[in-house]
Image 1 (spheres, rainbow, N blue to C red):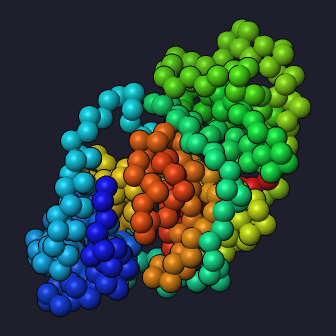
Image 2: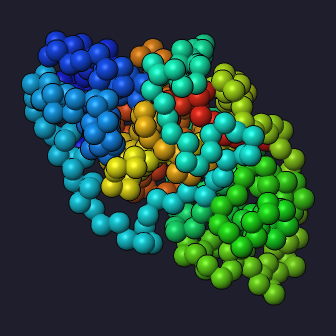
Length: 386
């Protein structure tokens, strides 16, 4: 997608805010957009498109906001709107949906069904003013290595992908380029991890770390990942799967987790410190939907599919599940309230974040993306590092 200078100039929240203020947009709309991390034209448009409850509940004057943006940013607004609309026209086949599979820890304040309050409401959770991270330069623990993303298919195996990525990157830093078996790790979780859900898809980071220590992880070539879910066999194991040779290969890579924290508070700073040490970080984050929307979440909204920009959840959005990814870097941004964006390696193929890299957007290649430090501070469910 082509970005004109006017769109790049509208990238910061202050630029969008100034434009909306000039057109007399009301304070409630501005406060809602600010809480939702709408710091550029694309995110504002994506919010209005994928979270119609904002307008229906009187939180955003959608017609006036759209008109103000069109007047302020002209052709750039038109092209961005067309690009986001085109994503809505893409078929969403059952085998190509963006599935997640992480689950919230029982002690997390965020559980499925919980709604995001407006920060100005009396029910809002304290902490709308985020502690800023001190990082002012970019970080990339991949050390510039090409590391294409993978695809979990229609299985809720994101936790296995996030934790396998930790091991791959650690081995890569030692000079060993290796492709590891998410299939083996997920089998171990479901058959030996004691997550209490042997016949249900999805799990927690802590159980992936437990079997990584007890069983290790095999090479991908020895047990290749199967993208299509077998609902009658969640682990995809069998009498001879895995074989003794695969088990032996995996055990050679058994490793204890160096760090695991669940239900953290204000986690952006400690997570960033792990990245500063050169350690990738597996994280589990809530996924939010609009009860009045069309089924897309803040993770597969139009702007996310296009540019890998995970939307900060807007007020009235409801937690619908959780997703695990591997954080591989950080991009400082003074316009983000907590100081910048964590770079994430997703497991939804290159169809997600399809237009990365792009001017003014954080992310090294298709399939990667970014999540704000504010989002990590306020909503993080679990994190882990080796």
